[in-house]
Image (cartoon, rainbow, N blue to C red; front, side, top):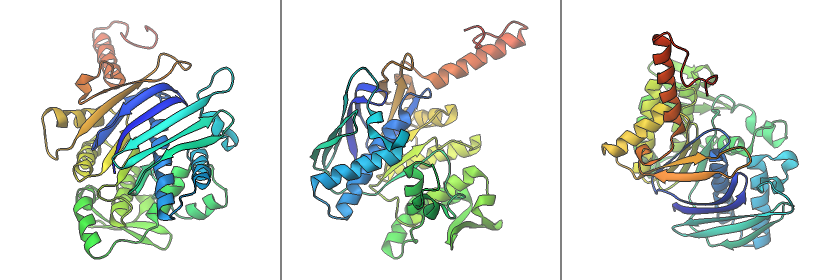
Length: 356
């Protein structure tokens, strides 16, 4: 199952948007507060609701609506968990409209500013497991997190809780483990070892020895989490991965390897969505398309932009970064280069905040 299109009206920062996705790797770029994470969280909430309904054989429409409302509230965490706050702000009462189309069906619903949800269509089937990896890693915080979250002692959004639940799964055995081994190989090479869950703590076993996960650098912990998710079957071929800022706390050498690993996952049938602010990661992914380097995967880039905090977000897409008319990451790097040239010449910095 792949998400093909998403239609949004009056949802958070989006007034009217239609986005068509790649079956492989989808790369979101844009300034802060342009809705990149919102879009991924929305898709994740819908898919996770459908996944759990299919698993529990829930067909009652009212139960599905209640589950979706609860999931949206816990994934987005608006004030007092009021889902009506996810409707785009404006005068008077409004309603958001959302429609997700996949290869196996569609899911559409409306959400009023009063928080009322109405599922108007749900024909999704064969929903495979989907994983959302937030910008902060979860391997080190795993110990005691599930219990503390269930007791409402933590204010994290539910993507962290879901991730910890997925991490708690036991490693696969038999043929499924052999299939996972093909997916996990490049990530274990990045990590330099294997991930082991003992009791309520993660450890990494490598040539350097047996190391507690929380003693590793955060970048390696993020990779370790992905290794364990593949080895326990939470992330598998034909599944779906949402990863918010995979480059966070990674050094440039690891960023280039993560770029390769993301393309590798997409080439193996996993539909991947990432949001990034990183120049190196976005350029590496674009160059791989431009020069058709292996592993080959269908890739699409999306730039999210808005004129001001009150205006609606507009989304432009292309097969490479060069296809986009706007690229805020590249634009800021160009300004940095101009500032460096001006300083070298003994002139006031060009392109600085003062001179803009």
